[in-house]
Length: 402
Image 1 (cartoon, rainbow, N blue to C red):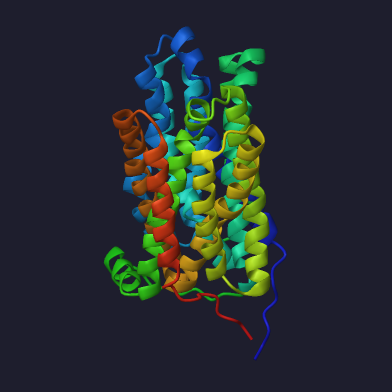
Image 2 (cartoon, one colour):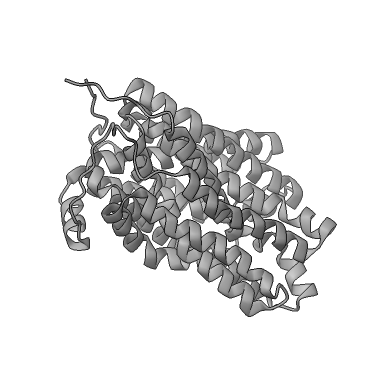
């Protein structure tokens, strides 16, 4: 058998992708970090300010599957280029009139339309450019960029506005988006000259893709895992700061520090866990560990009353639970096959975001009804328990290449 030559350009393609992925998350949360400023200085009502952020997950629900289909049919470069163009162009669009809410909203809508084309491209990138033993690592690094973008959006925006002004912040972010377009087209190739993973070029319809993956037992189980896992984690992360403040009587600043520790630990986990997974050639054990850690972490959150305990708990949870996202996405591609990598990834992202959209208000509704967070946290612990049982039924998806 003739051995292929692994392209060194794969790391450049991945680095460019990571830069654009960072921007999508940065633009998603940049206004959430300065909502008080927008209310006081631009006289924008709180509900409208919130919609500048909410538009991203809402449009993701509608565009996730279509973007995955386009990525599968037209290839990685074509699909992600749509996201890169929309992200860069609408980041500049807001500079037309930074004081206009309508301009800001249109820019957010434009960027949010492009977001699914970027986020759903990581599995196609890993399958097209990386050998089997590096696939989960590539997906992990791609996932890492999402958390990096969140941290920049939440952490860098307030000091930029305070020191340079609102318009200067938008200008800096706009330039970052604008240069992403030429960077993408200059440094991103459609595929390596000697492909390590041959991907068919035949036309793939939405119906064919959904029919194929919906008949695969492992993928059905993985979909349920994504539904619970992504949904529960996003719901918990949304209310974590409020839980720590109200239940543990931890100040908002310290609660924010704990949330940051969780995200930073998750970033490290998104690098380490997929690399270990590739090394040992196993996926399933890491989902089992994550679900068990999830149960323990939620129970600790229910009873702990110490900043140190909460900080350690957040670090452990971030490292083991957040890192399962790249594992899940890699498994989806391994189960569904290369030709359906985009559709399968989009489907799982859709399930997770849909569950989060339901779990987030349910947690707060139970909290308002009972006046405490014990019951909502108990519900999340039970869901993590169901997740562990579900993982037991899925088969190992890593297939050795000889």
